[in-house]
Image (cartoon, one colour):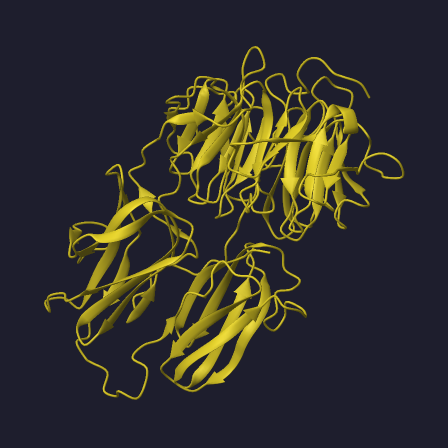
Length: 564
């Protein structure tokens, strides 16, 4: 268990970590398309403004310029962890300005950290050279050895580690994949390498595609998928033509594989069939791959970062200011800023950040008609460099949009939720109109939301005693701990339900499920105690959750964040 010289298994780069697992492969409950109704909510739970995307300047972060980085992982709290090629592991709690040496040679005999992952409990896992897998239960202050001893997980190289939303841990060593359902205490071997003993044997990447769906790949072991949490594995019907090395999954379940020499492949059927997606991708050797919450795909190569805004249909180089372009890992913070770990001669690759984050993260966008007027309401969970909004209207769903509002000021860069409203008085010549939001960055870049349709009836509500329309409000406070309140309004006596889901679409709580009279109601979702069922969140980990109101034909979903 001594020091190793030279790079690990891949001939091009050490295995990558997964960014902020369990949220690296998020799948959201699908709610359908645009609804042609009197009250409308954009489909999808997190609605990120589509962009005329512009790339910002890369800048080197903090005091890690003397290190080559194998992996970068960022917690939802903002804490940054990095694993280096020859200097152990570091943690920053201030956005990269200062760093603490948390996984060192003297205390843990750790020289090289290959991969990092976070559990829902907050535990941190680190795969290392020759020391196996280590775990910290106190955010990196102290570490314990998971491998070795009575554990079936060998005390050797761990190239990949990932934790699902339910807390199941998967780790890949030199030749096999292991699974732990108790947070890393006990392990079961679930996949054996077909090439153990070969020069590039072993699995190098692990990703999740939803509840119980796991994907693994390696430069010699190719690709396998499991739909039963790793109990059985299936090879693709037609796979990538080159060896897959790194994996990522977008919110719709599309799997992307970065290969050694073949560029990027994608699969829309769970890994059974694959298609090459390499238009304008000028480097076919992929060291890292990641998908942000807008489903933009980023890859790291020896010649810099490439980005696809259309699921791999086209790639654009993003290298402005990146003086060390050999990129080995990619991660995103809560504002959508991109972080990459680089290699360079002399060991000074360092950590780099691009401020081309997600401009707007919408949690809702509704168009409500009453008496011929249309009230538009939208809420943001976060904003980046947001100068303001303008509302646009069209008689067509995809073209001919014209502004109908003046500038509605935004809030710059913020992670505090904000709500906006605008009332339009459309001409009476049509029965329906489509609306979209145009947001303007501080650098004048424009971004557009999807369109929402409003059906114009011109009939005002006849009763002032009953609610005017069905609605679901944004929870408050948000983020929350220990409790948050959710307000909703219904207009008819009907069966009404309010349920909470995790990022994989699994129901975790039922807050309301009964016939309700017309009116406005408030329910509480609490983390004070008890089980998650029935409105308590005490058994839930920090992270993103969604709550959905179903009342007759009306369905609306908003996003909320539990922060412990």
